[in-house]
Image 1 (spheres, rainbow, N blue to C red):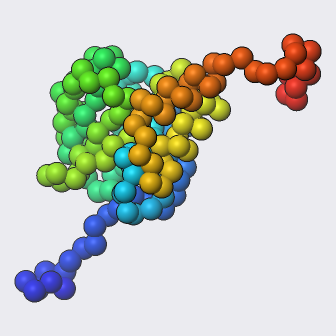
Image 2 (image 1 turned 90 degrees about the vertical axis):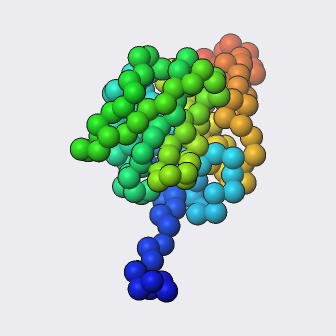
Length: 174
């Protein structure tokens, strides 16, 4: 109880889980595993397309379960197809802001001024590169910006593997 007699609800921090499927075949979401929020990014999201109306509702639903009601979502206008000004998700209006920032993040707002920054992994990223980039984004104390993480991981995934063609063709799983 607070001095006013109204029970004080503890702030809802990031969930303890680190890996969650938002919807079968739709997206993957990872969130920082500590409540400290000392890292540059609070999580990472790997949507399956650039369709805002298809990808955002399951993300908003999943985040609302852990963070409470969300009021706004900020998106990079150059990274998405046709961004509406608002979406109705689970009978709640969520306002969408779009900016031509090119920063590879989605900014989630809860309440008046409580922001969560999620790195957005491009939908065409390979699973291995996406997993590695997402793990780096949620590493406790991460101070690397989303664009730098993605550039490093996507470049690494595209680099030719070391070894002779015969060795590569004989690799397990081929």
